[in-house]
Length: 207
Image (cartoon, rainbow, N blue to C red):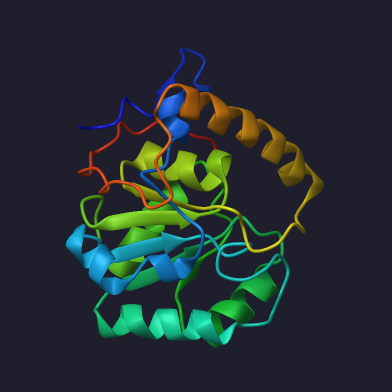
């Protein structure tokens, strides 16, 4: 079944958020749970991914060997990947993306969807064969659900180091997850198959 509509737009143009908009389709503890076989079985041929605390620790230039191996496996399977980052350090984003030989879109302003759409244009993908992967509910998962692609949450993220505002939002995330679990809406760590994709209603946003 499709998720409930992820988000709506009020008369004043402001985005409203409900629990469905913050619910990922799958939760993983490591990128290595996302094998090419699993992704292809779900019809996923392209991944939009966050950078910090998803692929590499926050502000880090270090590339873990296992990350390189994972990316090679995706490439060999024909799965495309593009980085979509809210980072305030574009030079580092450029350096890390170049080291990984990955395309990227900077200043995407998640949870806005325009940056994710640019990623899909870079990869030549669409909502039916794309997944959004990241470590934050209120940016990565919300943006992916608004766009209508499958959403995958990495929990926990790769490190505890992050902006103070992000740390504050982690407390809100904990409350959201607690409520989702109460309602039986939170996916298991080895969760069910990803939902079929849906085309979300575009929500006006400010650049």
